[in-house]
Amino acid sequence: MQHGDTLILILLLGLLAAWAGISFRKWLYEPYTDSFQPVRMTDYNEVPEDDEVVELLIGAGFDVVGGKTKIPISMTLNQKDELYSRLFIDYFAEKEDNLYLVKVARERRPLEMTGSAIRDMLLVYSLLVPEAAGVLYVDMNGRKIKQITFTIEVFE
Image 1 (tube, helix red, strand yellow):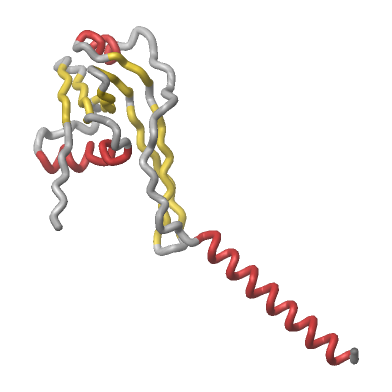
Image 2 (tube, rainbow, N blue to C red):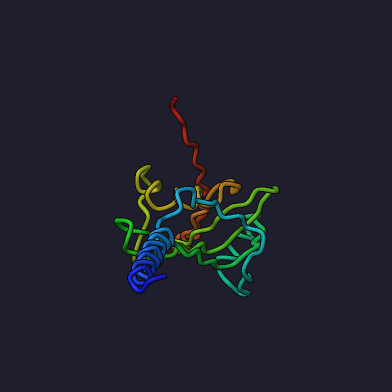
């Protein structure tokens, strides 16, 4: 092999390596199109003792089976910017073999009891854990539990 042939071979191998590296990096950061997987709740976080919300739920006939759970979320913006957030489920409760997700009312973010406000704030939890029978919205100021279920009609 002559000196010029070696130089061309090295140049071609360099281009091939650069192409492979760029392709791999693009594949690595490309969002997976079938990435949504509903959360399957099998192991729950510990339920706090001496908690007013837990006592209210037990008094209403619910068994509190799980404590506060953080669900991390990653998002890709314009196929390049990676953003992160999280959702919190305050408690998990069961009644008559039905699982309920529990959200506790926050003073700084009150929930209006309108269809659009409930949808905007709570529907995501029902979609995230499809085996849940609904969402329990607990207002500790009024010591009330509101049971919310969602039915989504699909048009064909």
